[in-house]
Length: 206
Image (cartoon, rainbow, N blue to C red; front, top):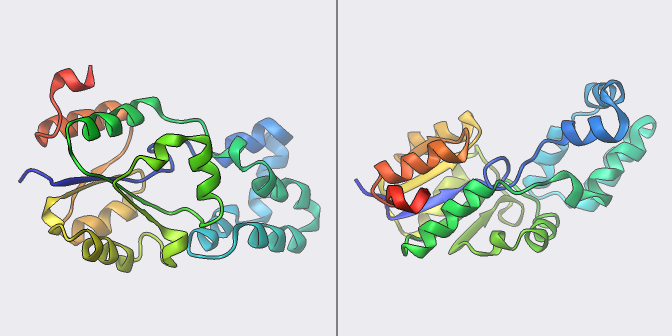
């Protein structure tokens, strides 16, 4: 069944999200390992993605871990250096779909305050027909409620949605709801998925 819309995750699909790599560069692997062992950075980001304030939550965690406060505050103060670079192949696919008239949505775990920072840095993040961003919605993947909210808003049957995400747990929930899914592991394989689905031609992706 040909999809009627394609839904992109953002982190590690359209822009890279590898905070460990950033901190390896900034403070060295040993200090980074100590930071991530002491502070659950990814849990902090999940709270932000679920609706907690970006600046206030980062500051709260920094105050709770004074030995690592300067590193933690970098997430607030240097966000655009961490959540980058763009993944060019995926951006090309997004634009190729739009050129073909295929509706393109975002479904991303992203804070209400830091998403605009990334959208200003990467204007292609403003090109979606619909953007479902978890922070403003107050719910985050893999909670089935956010998928149900997408379905209710867009009005497209689950079986006609094609969703790509780099996290297996997010894909699993979408599949259980009847969505077509692709576990993202690089733009080339997703490009072939889109060709097989009948949304793009081989010429579109070369």
